[in-house]
Amino acid sequence: MEVADYFDKFADEQFMKDAGGALAGLLAAETAAAAVAGRTVPGVGYQIGAASGVDQALGGAGVIVGAEAAPMVTGRMKRHMQVGGAVGIGHGVAERFGLQSALQNAVSALPGGN
Image (cartoon, rainbow, N blue to C red):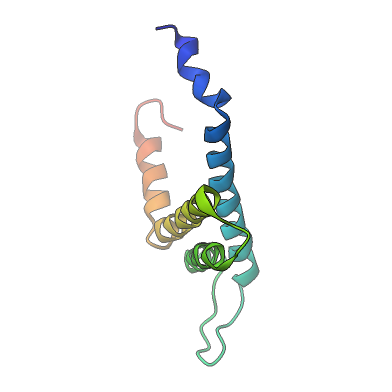
């Protein structure tokens, strides 16, 4: 099999639609995270810090719930947008517990790492 044959997936229309739905969900989660960052939770007094991980988790949860409730988002598109929201939650959790920086430090410690 030729190396070029492995790249046929990029020409698959359904694959690109699925990837676009997931990307839309992730971007919506990041946009929502930016909107809630720096706000104070009413009645609790907790301030949601920017890049604290809590903002991304809230943004991702909002996308998952919002896609479920939106009547115009259906089928595979709904599912893939929700997957993008879940990736946003995972990013927030990784940031909150320092997994992202730990991974970056581990990679930079490897021979040839940056």
